[in-house]
Each structure stands twice: as C-alpha cells, then as structure tokens.
Image (cartoon, rainbow, N blue to C red; front, side):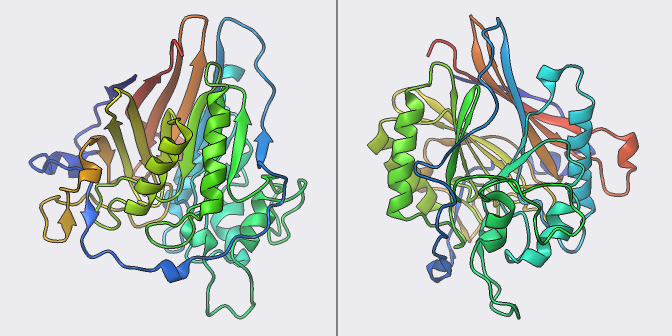
Length: 393
C-alpha cells in the first residue's frame, strides 16, 4: 500500500509548477528517439564473487522500534556551475550532523549514477566527486550512470569503460583512491558494477543500465536480477525490497521521456521471478518525479526519479500533447504522475521503520536554496513526502 503526503511548496519555490497547472503532465515517450545501441560498453570483470552481495551494517537488535535512514541522490557531476552540487552536499551533510539521535542519522549515501560528466575519466573524479564529497560524514555507495560508463574517444590516455568507477567503488579492500590527491575518502568494496546491498532493514538491488540513452541490460544481468528478486522475497517479512537503476523507466520530461527498454526489462523480470520490489529509484533525468503504477492484482509500485543532484541543466516536463511526444502507449496506461519538481536541485532522505505493529518506507525529497544564497544560513526545504506501507507482509 502506498500513501502520499504532499508538502506544499512556496509559490516562489514552485513557480514553474504553478504556472503550468493547465497542463496535465504524464509519462511520455519521445517520438524522435535516437538509436545509439552502438554505445554499449562491455563490463569489467567483477571484483567480488557471485552473487555480488555486500553486507552493510549489523543486524538490528530486537527492540520495539527499528529504523534505518539513508540519503539518495543522482546526477551530481558538473563542469560549468558546480555551486548546485556543492549546495546539495552541504545540505545533506548538515542533515547528517544535526540529527538529534543516532537512530535518525543517515547510515550512508546511495548514488544513482552520473558521478562525473561527460565521460568516466579518472581525471574528472577529484573536481566532480572527491573534493565536493570529501566532507560528507558517511560512507558513499553507488551504481554507475551512462556518463560514468562512457569512454572519451578523444582522450589522450587510453582507458577502459568503468575503470575509474571500479577504482573508487569496486575495490577489493578500502584503499586510497589514486586519482584523489588530497581526498580522505577511501575506495568502496562493492563486488560488481551491478550488486546487492544487504542492509539491516532492506535489500537494495543495484542494476547497471550502461551507456545508451535509454539503457541496455544483457541477459546475464537479467538472470542475476531475477535470482536476486527471488532471494530478496525470502526475507520480505523483515526487509524492504528496493531496486535502483540509473535510466528512468518512466519520465514526463522533454529531454529523455520514458525508456521502453527499461520498462520491458523490469516487467519481464518481475513476471519471471514472480516478485515485484516495493519501490524503484532512478536518476538520468535531471529533476524529481514521483509516479505510481497500479497493477491488476491491486499492488501499487512507486517509481521515483531523483536526478537533480547537481548537474547545472535541469529537465523541464513536456507537454504530453506536443508534436514530439507520445503519451498514448499501452505501456503507460497504469502509470500516474503524483508530484514533481523540475526547477530546483535536490536530494532524498529515506527512512525504513519497523515496529511490532507497523513496517514502512518513508521518503522525503528536499530542494536546496536558490543559487547565491548563503547555504550556511539556509536549510533545505521539504518539497514532497511519501510512504510505502509494508505492514502485514
């Protein structure tokens, strides 16, 4: 069961949304989609062993209330105007440091991809990731985005796809990141570019959707994904099932639109596994969108796009009746846009809480102050909240 609690933004904060109220925004496909499957990059060898699971944190002590909090953000890299990224990091760090209790403090940050632009070169990580995030107090885990996975054909030094991402996130043990000259952050030990986080109250399955604009996933990864869904279902009484991917399956924006390959991949995987997750997070589109999809069995599955983490160009929502948009596909029939913000950068804070009588995922989306505002004197503004009720599973 999914319930929605809308926070009312100020008129200044949501000016774009208020002006556009006459348009009924919805998920769309672009009619002029490019075919860039040739950009697909083969994957490096895993750094860990199959089935690529990483245990994070201790199992919760059997207390009346158990909780798990973490941040989530996507598409943070930037070259022209890094101020937005810096503000996002600053606000997340303030939330971390200003928590009243240990239980309220985020355990980690989960990055939804596109850590650097426009290619995954090692020499871009220091300015776009290591330096801005050096003061984030918690550990950072990630899936790779299309830009992290791409290879610059004009780079003077030859390198392989995901080479720098592996050095930063998929090392065999925590090490100094060789291309971070002054960073205190050590490399992560994720076992593969697609991998499963086994956390105290959640199983978080991270997919790798490669370089093409609308994503591409090979059969080997799909077989792994189906098995991970089945494995997660064995523990669903105690753990939420969360799926993370970079390319957004559903979007109402004018730059990308929805991804048919990702929709078909997910639905065929759910059917084969006989399991659906509780929520799906993605980035790629540079804004915030919250959809829900209603299935014939009565289950509602939320799809959250959170790709406004810092890249300077935000993506506005499209008129679904526009000449280059198609909103009438059967693949979009049961998907409904609940809320969105396309004119501010922001990030998510997710809390999973379990008591003897309730079990739920609580999501909060925050937007950052406008550029030019002293971030030390301003707090991120709560824009949207939602709840996924898992009680009684």
